[in-house]
Image (spheres, helix red, strand yellow):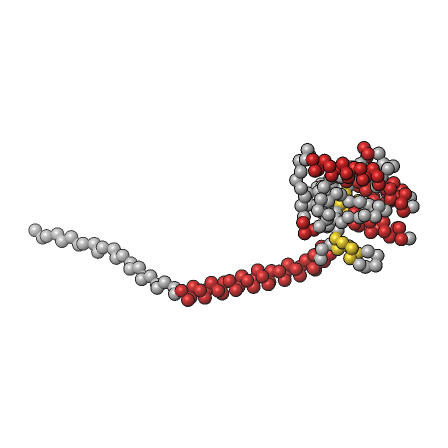
Length: 216
């Protein structure tokens, strides 16, 4: 008998893995880090501010420069975004500000309705209102005129808050009430997109228009 020789199947060769490369040196890691830092410094610290500032100046120049308002002589008198006090009773008054409209100190005291200091301030505001507006019944006084806004810098009041001041201003300036009411209506802005917020009147813009009427 012939012996049957079995051929042994060659075992599959295992591919040899390439030897791992040497770890990068600390100097190369530092070089990459410095280049990446410099790149992002230029992108975020130079390129982005220049592009965003340029786009803002091109598309929204007034808003980008602070929404500044000027009087008839061209002098900057304030911003439409920040309220300011008006001591002359011939002009419309804005909301109460516990920080005297100081923009660097935005905020207000979060007093509870029962807080004694809040009650004392509101009583003083009501007494001042009755003294300055004797012809307007107290029940017509809008709460917004004797209450503080969250920031203390609210530049706007409600149309009703402006209209209740018309009798006083008419008496002190000699302007007809109908003319003043029309002025308030002209400067009344509607809701944002017709949905958000309430109707409002910017006090500084209204008083600039009033100043022009008084000067005539």
